[in-house]
Image (cartoon, rainbow, N blue to C red; front, side):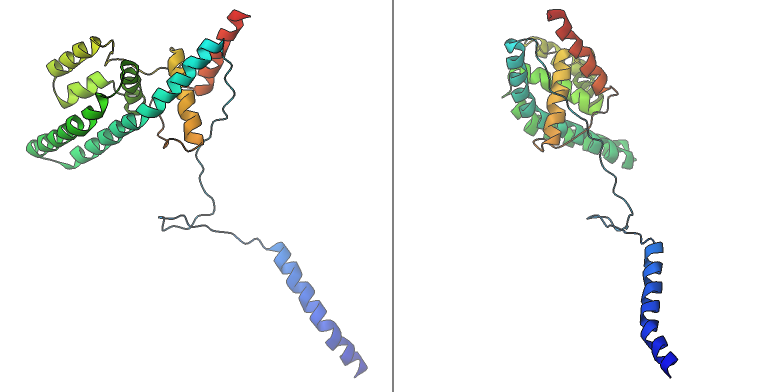
Length: 226
């Protein structure tokens, strides 16, 4: 009876120890469910984040130029994003339309929207803002503004628009290239900083370029003034 009593007292400890060992050896998977997603996941895919270094300017004048460029870029970017979104919607919609008549009708609707809503805002922009917009449209779509007009309208209309824009020193054929243009590198830096602080809604460029490579290239300009 005495031995039985000892066993009864030790049994709960023994069972607890077994249970503890089992929990230590097991690995429980944790699943998460994102809003708007019906599938549970073990991990969350995060967007790539650039580590942005402080820009060193040659002089005060260049710093002021950057500040002015930032103000203009922040103003113009939403319109470039709108153009990219409309182009993507247009492409996806046209893929679903089999009849040429339906395709032409839908293209006409997009044209009317761009001319009535989009062009009205463009007229309020300065020359430099208009040129930045042309560059950003190329950044967002991979197509120059000239070619976009040519595809939506006609070669002659694109030619006419381009010559008209030249009167204001704006080229619709201008491309976005942070490696070749210091201004474009500054614009990309402004965008990336604005994406990270939430000031602008992110839209990655469809163009292939290495931001850090551009950063290193334009940092070399500082050595020429030392």
